[in-house]
Amino acid sequence: MTDFRKRCVAHDRLVGIFCAIPHPVAIEVSAAAGPDFLCIDWEHAQISRERIEDLVRAADVRQVPAMVRVPGHASEWTAAVLDAGAAGVLVPRISNADQARAAVKATRFPPIGERGLGPGRATSYGYHIPDYLAAANERLVLAIQVETAEGLENIDEIVAVDGIDVIFVGPSDLAASLGATTPADAERLDAAIVTIAKATRKAGKVAGIFRPNTVDVGKWADAGMTFFILGSDTRYLGAGIAAGMETGRKA
Image 1 (cartoon, rainbow, N blue to C red):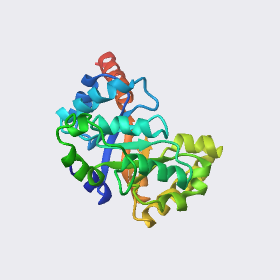
Image 2 (tube, helix red, strand yellow):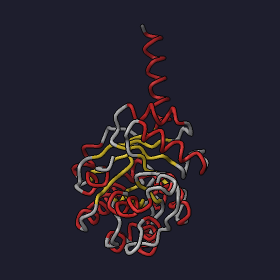
Image 3 (cartoon, rainbow, N blue to C red):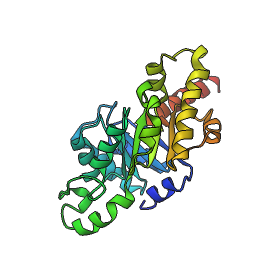
């Protein structure tokens, strides 16, 4: 798992899923399926702060890196998931360079950032603080989500911020922000995503995107994306049940 950030910044293709089911069993089952990483969705799923640690621990059992999408920009949310032992953080709705710099400060220890050091699970509850402090800045993945018209406008300034690993596109919110939500708007949305990907790669950073399924992963890989979150545990659960029911009825 210590290779997660190394593989990420080397632009290896990494494929993960969002995890929205707030139970360790769902995390273990998802991890056993073979993703490169999991992203626990604290922003949109009904997951409590105290549950995060159990979910991260369940991923660790299967030796699959678990990052967490935090609810917003508050530094205490980032601190909570990293102290719980998460392998990284995904910060939503980053629309300008100041917000990006704040994400770095919350994620990285000095001298890069301003993260506080505490006796949480990440430091073996305080018993391995020096070891964790020495390695955390090099091991933790910081991904920021660009999903607004303002973020698109400011993309060159955002990608120039030191300490960011992944610029991750949220297509649905970006589409809504741009007013590009119909099939007729698809080309305009695609052009915006390509603009973000090009700026990201030009800055030497990793470009990522959410896709609900695998249909067009090749298209976005060709555009320079290497960090993919595909669907979610709830989506795959529903799809698997639906496929089983259909097969059973036709057999």
